[in-house]
Length: 347
Image 1 (cartoon, helix red, strand yellow):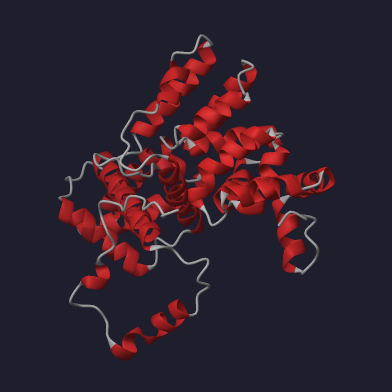
Image 2 (image 1 turned 30 degrees about the vertical axis):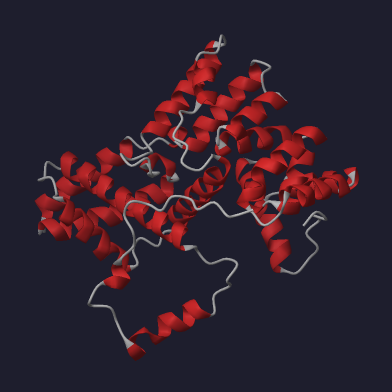
């Protein structure tokens, strides 16, 4: 099967193409580090481009909010680009939780793009049908997802990151990093300028709401579907068929009794990881076969191999994996770091 190319972001990371590119021995430390990175873990060019575009957009959006709150002039597009370039070069944007969110969004886009038909631009009928649901909670939750999604797509339909998607402590770190760059850009030094800028940052952070994260909106919708008795196999099929990979994962997460992050890693990984998740979620074999066929383009595992893995897992192995995944992640990480058996026979 020919691989499906997923969309590259509108803004590419073209810093390497600039005439000021470092040459010869000046590049050697970076080249050596890059050359010996694990090839299986490196970013693809699509992931790098998409993550760069989302991060640059988030920097510009937060900077604009801070300027507005501090009653400073609005920046031109070139100013926002320069702001991002300075922060990127400084290393100040290397905030682990922010990078983790960017990577998750890039992976979601990759998987969703392999599910949707190439060139398809049809509306998400799954969500619109749920928005017209007779159950008021389901309808409201579906509409919240639709509205949340609209804020996270740009005019080219490329994904955007909202500050609400960033965990609270990382959001504080991020806003103040951007604030420092705005201060430098404006030449706004001195106690009065710092006070106005700090007030602007506090105003932006006061509006930060983790409950509006996409993961939170997906959780609320799946919770409402569960409460309405509509969390069945047909809903799971419909979510996947419309490329709603986040909702699909949240349904599997709830049915399997594991957290969303754990479920997402298995959906993105495919293979035995996905097969085990489907078994933990009590997905019938015929539905698992349909999922295997749809998901085959997102990984190296073909439909026949995936359903073979699904069939090969014993009930005991599945329950052992579920028990292991329900343990505190810090405990699991420590066991793995010490070289201990991880209690997960499905990997």
